[in-house]
Image (tube, rainbow, N blue to C red):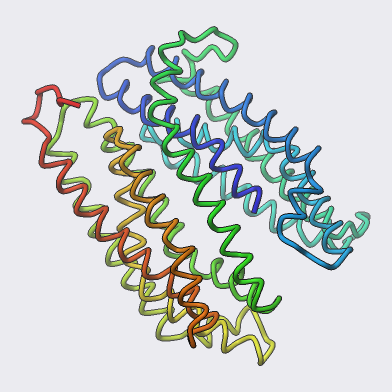
Length: 398
């Protein structure tokens, strides 16, 4: 959960750098883009060191928040937290460089780098957890070491990629003193996204405590169910990153018709994908959940999770794609306000519905209802914002 929280911290540097690099390149200013890239990386390194210090020295109270009772689980959780978050620097650098490369229109290399990291993690996990060959069985420590090692490998791949770049990174001076105005602009754009992610994660932590009130099986259902559900939102995240870069560059180049057309194409594709995911989750919940959990008493709970969350997939895909599009226009504050308000509404909604005969299913319905509302509202907001864009070649008024 705290590694997820870390993504909210790095979002400030990532989003601010990504949007401004795209705007600068769209305006034909690669030198300016390089300064924004350097500034984003400098912020990321600082944030990583601060986050690592907090999690390493505050591991006990941070894990204690969840109210776990098993001593072995508490110890393992603290060990995992100290390793994965203590070495969070690699994760932060990967996120920021991914954002910058995407802003440059390069989604291929980030994809390759992250696939390499994923494959290495899949290989190292069983080797270090169970002790295969000459490696000792490290258990939870092995899982944490595998994660950090995979992230470090991704960072190395990125360093090889950026060393060959001749558009932005060849002009980046990582130790250069960046003018304060650059940081101000990045903070203005990135802060709302960071606050949004931090609040979203905090809300998720509170909701996880609600779920824990229904037993360990309920927590397992939420964890496995969210991983299954990722087939839709991870795809939508990828499209959001792509449309963010596309819109950012075209907005910087004052090609507003391409902004509108690009968004409508992307959101249409993602709505269809979300509809497909909804059909799969609603139509085959038992078969899908049974691949991960075999306990007969837990499977019905998993079926309910997938069916209920299945109704929101197309709206969630629209939401995430639109957030990427609006962020490309620099409208990160608008995205944050909508996301925070409606995601926060999950807490009272979950309290009300879970105390009704719906019980645990009430929490899942709180997730779905808020996702549907956000998807609809974000789509309407983009239509309104894009409707205020001037003709191609003119300077936007905001």
